[in-house]
Length: 525
Image (cartoon, rainbow, N blue to C red; front, side):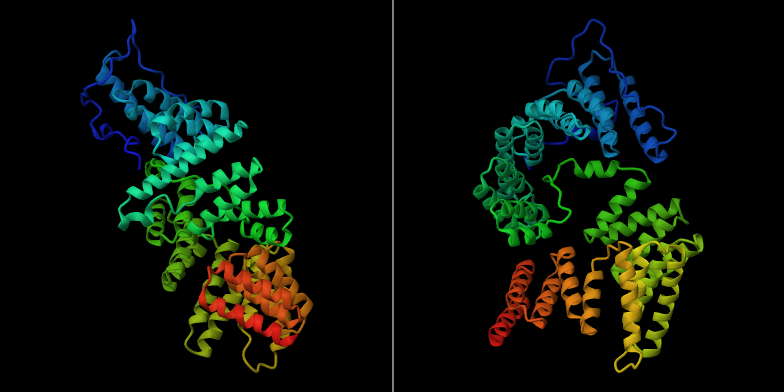
């Protein structure tokens, strides 16, 4: 990290502490403190956010009371208080008062530029969030040369330049971001490099986007290859690569890469203020959103701690209880997951999502059952809960999917009723599909069901859909390869197997599978 991008240690000082100034105080005949930002009517705001902001506003007022506006030491204390206020505003998406607070901090804080520049940078970031690209560009251009070792500053400058149509300047900014990442990587302790910025290829992809706009397809493609070497499953890199292939007329490769970039969006390098902003996020929605992000990133203990803290305030909130149940399920503790879901069902007996979560949990219990009798008991409980969800929400796709999955899981070897059960399972899957179910394994389940029924045309159709919805899943491509082999589509089978190898990052077992597919195709000629 650039040593010039340092959060001032003065933030740890008491509000009334005297601080030596390195620059002259503000000169004015009748110096006065800046006006505090107006946050408007708070009646409809989340009261947790209101309380947080009010506490920071009170801190600024207290800082102002510690000295007169013409005194350099007092200016510094008030400036740092405004900086903290800006973080509280920005963390809770109150961009306009955040800009005002950061600008006051930039004027009042004493000392070298490095003491003020972080807050001028934050003002630029908030201006960009508001949509004022021109003002953001002005602010970021001012501080970027002085924060030359911080990739995120140049990345935001590059984005602002791009928004204003300044492609050459955008390219220069993204190149500076790449260089800053490399410097940070080179300086990092080898034991700490897993957390260093360089494995996140955002800046390379950002520059690739500019080169693509400038029709430098070769240069853009080379950068994207570098990015994918750093992080093979980086969606935005795949998406841009697909666009390049489409431009070059390589339609099949374009479709493959674009599918791997589904729902891709530009990502910026890590922000040094990130932890501070996270600490200031308040409000129900904000907290739930970041708990879900922690769960997606595998930080289950952190997520559970956050959920427990929320349940102290909202012990009967079924959304929090359901998310806590899912977190414990992901940790493998089915008993605790069941406890939370039972609490949730008691709190809100008519909530379809709770019943569906219970059905999923009982399916997991069935998968672990030690005896056929216990497995059947868990499947019966899962069926009951899924039927309850369907009665409450017959217009949603997910309950139909899990109801079909329960039927499919209940099929036993040599069961004379297996054909009828398959038909019921398929009927539920078809309804799930008709009602827009987004479960990633729906198409795989449908393809497998059609395969077992010998309906090869439908099998291939849904196997292909499975690769489009789960393009990063090697199993989806391997199933597609098997489906193509079954209907005698040799070249398509080889292509699917090669894509399985690509998305698995050359997993040895997948490589062996691809060799077997190629050999089978050759033998069939």
